[in-house]
Image (tube, rainbow, N blue to C red):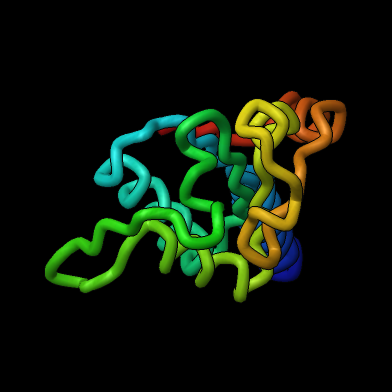
Length: 144
């Protein structure tokens, strides 16, 4: 009888641990979409992307319209206090950490620019790939 109780407790514990680990894995995919021209909004998007990554989130960033401007080489930077960083600085930090950062495919042609206008590490998004990720059951889509 004691063995059955111990076995039952072990099984319940294993089930709880594996279920919680599985739920954590599912909830970690996060697609940040930035379209705002506002530097403060762009900064918050980069801060939350960075913080989510640091907490184990599987983060990716999609920049469209005016939001794509932060990926341009030599774009105007607004430095925010007290951290003394700009959205561009945090974006480059995400790229260095291996986070996928993409611009919408219409962004560069609409500006009359080529891929060489983007900071290193930023690529052009492929809509079928982005859409496939967005419809996955446990992907969180965060827009700015």
